[in-house]
Image 1 (cartoon, rainbow, N blue to C red):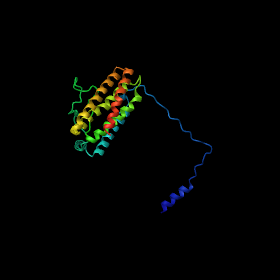
Image 2: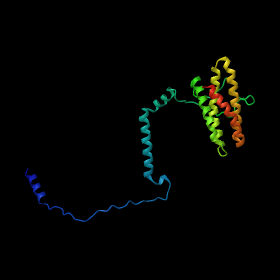
Image 3: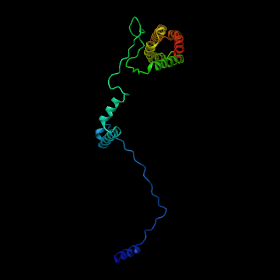
Length: 221
């Protein structure tokens, strides 16, 4: 206690530090230093930052998946992922071009999900509606986009038409088959006109295609 009292006595006797008025501290503006070398090996700090970032991403991925092998097994078991190559779709009805055995507008490596007959009929109607709206896209400088958009939509319509025809009653198969072939013949002519970038021919082919698309919408309603 005596020692503490002595210490208190010493602190009491110390003079207070005088305050100096009207002195403001100024902050120095940061200096920007540039480096001429662009190679990462010249900057060890940069390499350390990249390594730390890679480690952090790896830990985060393990944390989210729980375990790396579990993540792979889940992807294979939940039926929402395809671990192998995309399956090539095929058709059962005679809707291909008789001369070529296929259709020129078909896109490859396009996954066709099985959405049932009703889903295919609905998608046929939606694709026909979208292609009817494509009329505003046709122009001198847009024929390349017309060709790509036509190929994308017509590929879905091709395989959906095959499913609808296969599931139709016997007395409705032939009318649907005729409608599909007329539509796909018109698609090939329209695609060829857009490919050679002939605006008058594209507009003419589209007018012919437009009437068939309207028939498809009415039939699939």
